[in-house]
Picture 1: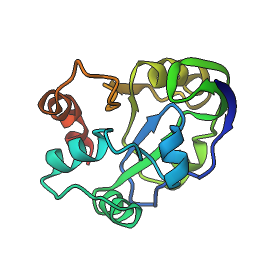
Picture 2: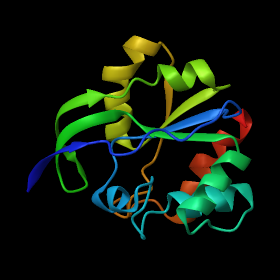
Picture 3: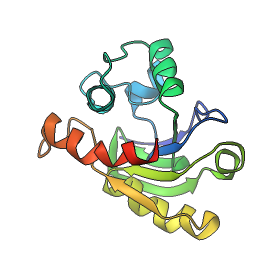
Length: 163
């Protein structure tokens, strides 16, 4: 069932953030939890924790500490859209977030997008405004079963050179 979704929580960053990772829009589970990558089978936190040699942060508070400690900012490309559940391919009428506030206030050295849809939306809606190309990373969604955790960690390794 398609619904209009408006982003319910803001970006997570501070002045020391060095990389900005953008998804498309929060999934129903993430909206329910009130923070990014909240689906229990999403491998985002597991991939980053493995990459950075830390325990997987299981709570929102631990995730925020993890991000701060590792200089990672999180947000989404979209402020609102029509979407069917968590299916990025069903996104219609996308409205972008204004990422300039993060770029103006933080020491962002690189922008990353997670998944094909976030990348395409960024290129269409954000790149013309901010002028900063994004580096595409694979989706950590459970729907992306073509990527094992080891393969995801290998792809996400590119983040390290910007931290």
